[in-house]
Length: 173
Length: 433
Image 1: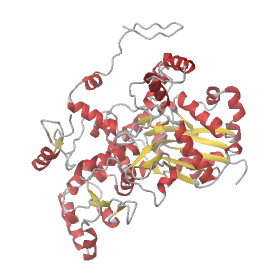
Image 2: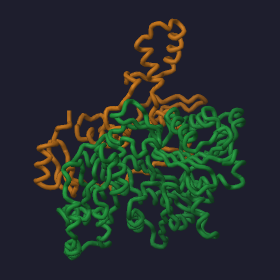
Image 3: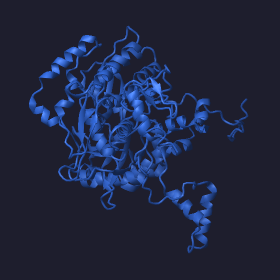
Image 4: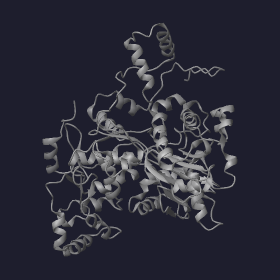
């Protein structure tokens, strides 16, 4: 099952890792409902809801590898006159602050033996009951019904009318 | 101030508490962020400048050095600390030691960055790192009569997350800590979302909604009953209240329109609801005087919004994150799992001394609700006793102050020369993290 070689040098396995099936499905799905739900949960952790005021970083695709450091050194030593777009983007990626998730990835916590407590093991796991209560998005009361088009909950006809007039599918691309 | 004093710094994701060791209260409690209002011209307000009475709090975009509770941006943090140290505490770092409170399970990269910041950028003489549950336990144990239990379960509902940590003999049991990824920040964002969806679009106004959350939100003891009550209109609704937004001319900060009205829910009877409850409440509210009528009329010149059931739905997410769709257990289960991972002999003692700390426990009726949720999950022969600190925000700082004034504090620090000799990783092992 596990092709990993645990010799003196740890090699990464060639087996594709299995994510939790629901999570993988949600991430891969183009289903608006799961995407909207995930986006909502991500938004709970954000600091600024509006467009991020990023003064330096224009290039989202830039990220640093080991080769890039060498590249930057070489470029800087050669000529300081003209910076190519790639070099500039790499410099910006270096200056941009890292998020915690990146730091966590780098820490490689799965490599620790199981008796060592770590950030990931300290997470309280899923709830013991999977039943959840739904609340109407218009007024907040207990919701019993779902909109067929976008999946939002509502509690009564009046709230459904308001939802259809103002919100249904208005925020979905 | 003493020339070789100890600076106690509780570095939190939301608020930074700083002061001198041995004192009762910190000298400065400031927001740990930089903010820039969209209207002012490009000047970043640091920390306490955001709290000034004439600061513009509308549409402030914030930059935090913390992300999910850990320090990932040392440059921003340095600016906040420099302002704290130079202007507010007026202390010279090179002649003082620092007691820093760090969150549990910091990744090594974060620890190294913090060490660099403390020793190389600011130049402190010595550093000691502590974690919050141990300090809370220390403070509470010193206030209890001696001979009491030497262990407790500290529930810290902070800005970025909530930890339930068992502490034995001033030492946190790392394997028993359980973390819930919800805190004050998520609560504020949730309230922003609810209000923006239902009345005014306030997605950019973090500071204003923070204020509204602290003043108006409460914990409900029975959601179905409270939702029914919140549906009523007008005077019969004990939860309805209005928050007035700042308009920059007459007042720069928002305020609650009518504070007594906001407290009406306190007269609601506790316990399970019956049909007669509703009738009794209606009779109670009918003897309002005329004076209150004027205050409650909607003032069309001001920008304001109403809150009814959002007041108790927002803290509800700490107790049931599944309602939002998060795949995490609630606070009561978090506590039970933390205790169950400890030795069976320790469990009854831990349940008997649960300490609540952290800013998010300041919601009214928090402890009552937690006890109600916790009691069915705990075996019958164990007692459940929940203590709230008298000041949850400053609780950790006061524990740090106690630790800093203890006689063997100096032996627990690493000095700058030791750091420069052996480096950060080996120094950290002394703190057993």
